[in-house]
Amino acid sequence: MLNHFYKKTCQGAALAAFLCSGIVHADVSISEGWLRAVPPVSPTMAGYLTVTNNGAFSVKIIGASSEVAGHTMLHSMKTLKDGTRKMGHLHHIMLEPGESFSLSPGGDHLMLMKLRRVPQPGESVTVCLMPEEGDEICANLPVLREAPEV
Image 1 (tube, rainbow, N blue to C red):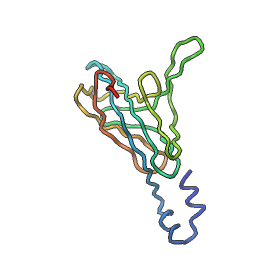
Image 2: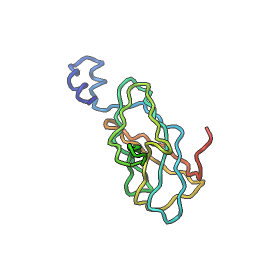
Image 3: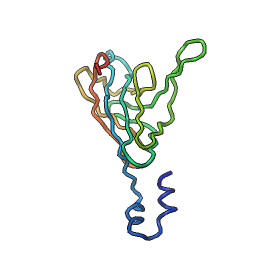
Image 4: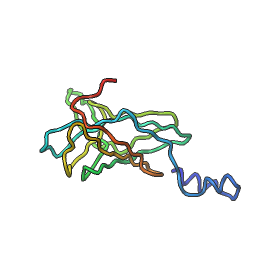
Protein backbone atom coordinates (compact mmCIF):
# COMPACT_ATOMS: atom_id res chain seq x y z
CA MET A 1 0.00 0.00 0.00
CA LEU A 2 2.65 2.55 1.02
CA ASN A 3 5.10 1.27 -1.58
CA HIS A 4 2.41 1.85 -4.21
CA PHE A 5 2.11 5.45 -2.98
CA TYR A 6 5.87 5.92 -3.12
CA LYS A 7 6.15 4.43 -6.62
CA LYS A 8 3.43 6.76 -7.88
CA THR A 9 4.98 9.88 -6.32
CA CYS A 10 8.69 9.23 -6.96
CA GLN A 11 9.66 11.58 -9.78
CA GLY A 12 13.30 12.57 -9.13
CA ALA A 13 13.15 15.31 -6.48
CA ALA A 14 15.49 15.09 -3.50
CA LEU A 15 12.61 14.22 -1.17
CA ALA A 16 11.37 11.62 -3.62
CA ALA A 17 14.83 10.03 -3.66
CA PHE A 18 14.61 9.62 0.10
CA LEU A 19 11.04 8.33 0.04
CA CYS A 20 11.64 6.03 -2.92
CA SER A 21 14.39 4.00 -1.31
CA GLY A 22 11.82 1.18 -1.10
CA ILE A 23 12.15 0.90 2.67
CA VAL A 24 9.28 1.99 4.86
CA HIS A 25 10.26 2.39 8.51
CA ALA A 26 7.23 2.31 10.73
CA ASP A 27 7.45 4.07 14.08
CA VAL A 28 5.55 1.42 16.00
CA SER A 29 6.01 0.55 19.67
CA ILE A 30 4.98 -2.37 21.85
CA SER A 31 4.10 -1.81 25.51
CA GLU A 32 2.40 -3.61 28.40
CA GLY A 33 3.38 -6.98 26.93
CA TRP A 34 3.33 -10.31 28.75
CA LEU A 35 2.73 -14.04 28.20
CA ARG A 36 0.45 -16.13 30.41
CA ALA A 37 2.34 -18.98 32.09
CA VAL A 38 1.03 -22.46 31.25
CA PRO A 39 1.71 -26.00 32.51
CA PRO A 40 4.98 -27.55 31.26
CA VAL A 41 3.13 -29.89 28.87
CA SER A 42 0.96 -27.24 27.21
CA PRO A 43 1.30 -26.94 23.41
CA THR A 44 0.04 -23.32 23.41
CA MET A 45 0.19 -20.10 25.38
CA ALA A 46 -1.48 -16.70 25.06
CA GLY A 47 0.21 -13.32 24.81
CA TYR A 48 -0.97 -9.80 25.41
CA LEU A 49 0.39 -6.37 24.51
CA THR A 50 -0.47 -2.92 23.26
CA VAL A 51 0.87 -1.83 19.89
CA THR A 52 0.99 1.88 19.06
CA ASN A 53 1.59 3.65 15.75
CA ASN A 54 3.69 6.71 16.59
CA GLY A 55 4.37 7.47 12.93
CA ALA A 56 2.80 9.59 10.23
CA PHE A 57 1.53 6.73 8.02
CA SER A 58 -0.94 3.89 8.51
CA VAL A 59 0.57 0.56 9.54
CA LYS A 60 -0.99 -2.84 8.86
CA ILE A 61 0.19 -5.65 11.18
CA ILE A 62 -0.31 -8.95 9.35
CA GLY A 63 1.19 -11.51 11.70
CA ALA A 64 3.45 -12.38 14.60
CA SER A 65 6.28 -14.74 15.46
CA SER A 66 8.25 -15.99 18.45
CA GLU A 67 11.37 -18.09 18.84
CA VAL A 68 9.58 -20.50 21.22
CA ALA A 69 6.61 -21.25 18.94
CA GLY A 70 6.34 -23.18 15.70
CA HIS A 71 3.40 -20.95 14.81
CA THR A 72 2.19 -17.63 16.23
CA MET A 73 -1.14 -16.03 15.32
CA LEU A 74 -3.15 -12.93 15.99
CA HIS A 75 -6.44 -14.22 17.44
CA SER A 76 -9.81 -12.55 17.75
CA MET A 77 -12.31 -13.30 20.49
CA LYS A 78 -15.96 -12.88 19.60
CA THR A 79 -19.00 -13.22 21.86
CA LEU A 80 -21.84 -14.89 19.99
CA LYS A 81 -25.55 -14.08 20.42
CA ASP A 82 -26.01 -17.09 22.72
CA GLY A 83 -23.26 -15.78 25.02
CA THR A 84 -20.63 -18.32 24.03
CA ARG A 85 -17.21 -17.09 22.99
CA LYS A 86 -15.34 -18.10 19.88
CA MET A 87 -11.70 -17.61 18.91
CA GLY A 88 -10.64 -17.12 15.32
CA HIS A 89 -7.81 -15.82 13.19
CA LEU A 90 -7.43 -12.04 13.30
CA HIS A 91 -6.10 -11.45 9.79
CA HIS A 92 -4.58 -8.03 10.49
CA ILE A 93 -4.50 -5.02 12.76
CA MET A 94 -4.77 -1.66 11.02
CA LEU A 95 -3.27 1.26 12.93
CA GLU A 96 -3.77 4.82 11.77
CA PRO A 97 -1.23 7.43 12.93
CA GLY A 98 -1.52 7.92 16.69
CA GLU A 99 -3.70 4.83 17.21
CA SER A 100 -3.12 1.98 19.66
CA PHE A 101 -4.56 -1.53 19.68
CA SER A 102 -4.58 -3.77 22.74
CA LEU A 103 -4.35 -7.54 22.73
CA SER A 104 -5.70 -8.35 26.18
CA PRO A 105 -7.09 -11.20 28.32
CA GLY A 106 -10.66 -12.01 27.33
CA GLY A 107 -10.30 -10.15 24.03
CA ASP A 108 -8.11 -10.22 20.96
CA HIS A 109 -4.74 -11.79 21.80
CA LEU A 110 -1.67 -13.61 20.51
CA MET A 111 -1.62 -17.40 20.39
CA LEU A 112 1.78 -19.07 20.50
CA MET A 113 1.22 -22.60 19.20
CA LYS A 114 3.33 -25.72 18.66
CA LEU A 115 5.60 -24.60 21.49
CA ARG A 116 9.17 -25.81 20.98
CA ARG A 117 9.61 -25.41 24.73
CA VAL A 118 7.35 -24.04 27.43
CA PRO A 119 8.76 -20.82 28.93
CA GLN A 120 8.50 -20.64 32.70
CA PRO A 121 7.39 -17.72 34.91
CA GLY A 122 10.22 -15.24 35.30
CA GLU A 123 11.59 -15.80 31.79
CA SER A 124 11.29 -13.30 28.96
CA VAL A 125 10.43 -14.35 25.41
CA THR A 126 10.95 -12.35 22.24
CA VAL A 127 7.74 -11.79 20.29
CA CYS A 128 7.72 -9.96 16.96
CA LEU A 129 4.86 -8.33 15.08
CA MET A 130 5.08 -8.33 11.30
CA PRO A 131 3.95 -5.20 9.50
CA GLU A 132 2.92 -5.49 5.86
CA GLU A 133 5.72 -3.01 5.05
CA GLY A 134 9.05 -2.63 6.84
CA ASP A 135 10.90 -4.49 9.55
CA GLU A 136 9.45 -6.64 12.33
CA ILE A 137 8.67 -4.91 15.61
CA CYS A 138 10.00 -7.04 18.48
CA ALA A 139 9.80 -6.94 22.26
CA ASN A 140 10.83 -9.19 25.12
CA LEU A 141 7.69 -10.22 27.00
CA PRO A 142 7.85 -11.59 30.55
CA VAL A 143 6.09 -14.86 31.36
CA LEU A 144 3.70 -14.26 34.25
CA ARG A 145 1.17 -16.38 36.15
CA GLU A 146 -1.30 -13.49 36.40
CA ALA A 147 -1.93 -10.23 34.59
CA PRO A 148 0.29 -7.45 35.86
CA GLU A 149 -1.36 -4.68 37.82
CA VAL A 150 -1.54 -1.54 35.75
